[in-house]
Image (cartoon, rainbow over all chains, first blue to last red):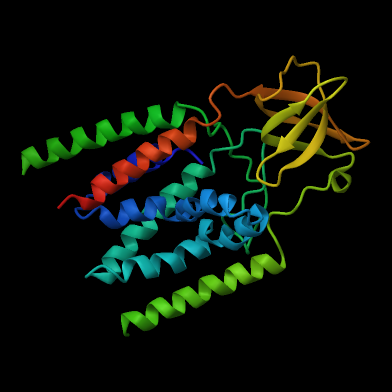
Length: 153
Length: 122
């Protein structure tokens, strides 16, 4: 995964370009596929086998898992449909960004259980600063774009 | 439809998915014999022993693999390898030493604070 700052900046960029005013569901969606990773340090401390843990939470990092967990998150918002669209948009930016990792190829299970192959799209290392640099530039562009549009209204 | 019912349906769906994955795991304990003769990448392994070959610890499964490489690596370094598995050993074709392997976690902690700020804004 790229770091969470890059994910959030990418979510901001996409949401701003699409003119989404309430970006909170998008931000939640951006981190939703990785939300389970908060539990990993805790489970490591409790000496629960990480492989079992990773398998239990693996569906949360898939398209199907995002559709289901997105319903739960969106149900806490007043406008369920709009919030759900925002959450799904944010989560999809996350999954697409993650598909650019692993330059030497790996099985990507985002589309599990439909497909679990190697898309061959990996070009970035997860410890690279490149995603942060690119998403920062995109966010500055989106911020400027929004200001220009607002000034014309 | 009542929102509580929607949440329950979604949670049951997620639990069923998790149960299904536990029965047919995506992540498995690494068994080198399953990949004999195959090309394989190992990301972010930790060098735990060196000598005539290196021993690398693989990810969260903590399994070890013997690595044959010309690279000059030292114990404790985090390295990604790509190569062919032969006789239970990985013969490295390319490798990358990670200078800042934990940077993604540090930045993610910053990201978590950024997220809290963005969410708590009116």
